[in-house]
Length: 112
Length: 107
Image 1: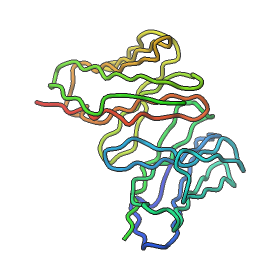
Image 2: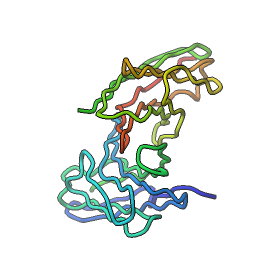
Image 3: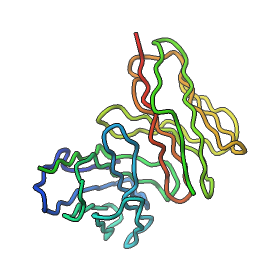
Image 4: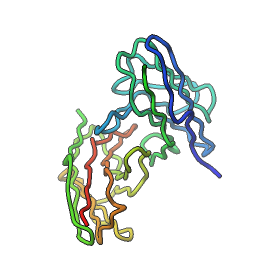
């Protein structure tokens, strides 16, 4: 079955550590996105990529980094520079930019 | 700039009808999306309007007026499972999401 997966579902991190969140899709979508959602808030765009080996900063890119070496994969690294990383992270993909986005199940990151 | 506004919370009764409004300002326009998000889960796609007018899909309908920068989501015959957040979102090249409207359904 085609879909978009994120792992792990829950992730704990000690302050000062980098952590990488996985996002994989087998929908053959060109565009992929990372969002952050805080309790009771909407989605804020961190990074997006419309094609392999290219990506753009969203509204809140500081403290995060991404790579897009393969069409299927768009991992997000939360660096120690991100001062308030505890949040729900959602990955999405679409056929191309601006089209309907399909979301993965999300990763809940908790900094201890 | 780009901005999307929708009410923060709404309450309705099981079996009733509710309308969730959304106004938007974007530098370009390529349609308007509505997503549903249950607590703790990922958003799921509900509808996409690119032309003016009403599009009906079962109990859910979505309306768009491009000249007014306005859309609404209409939910009929409300069920308890409709308790969720409803997110309005607009392109152009990336999608800008509103903060969502939390809909509470009372029995």
